Image 1: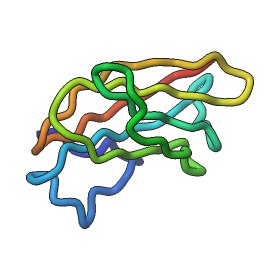
Image 2 (image 1 turned 120 degrees about the horizontal axis):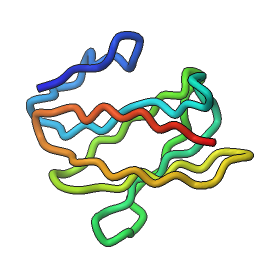
Image 3 (image 1 turned 120 degrees about the vertical axis):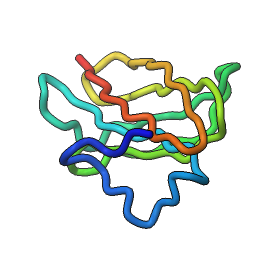
Image 4 (image 1 turned 90 degrees about the horizontal axis):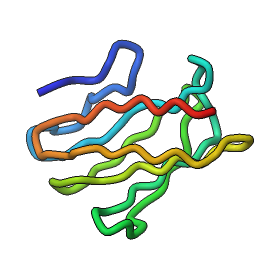
Length: 99
């Protein structure tokens, strides 16, 4: 099991043993991107959820087991897709660099 990265989102109050967590940070040139949107798409590409990034560029989803795609949309950047595997009992930590 992996935990949140230093400086990342706190997992306080999250029962990781019962959740499949996908979380991370959107960055541009190494700096956090506030106000981007991260979409969670299922294996077939269907929209499941969307969240805005926080002031520190972070986002979090609670997902089911399996393969997912994170699609990041931000001003002055092309959309970025990143595949991720979610599993109950694990935290999938993802950094998404955008142009």
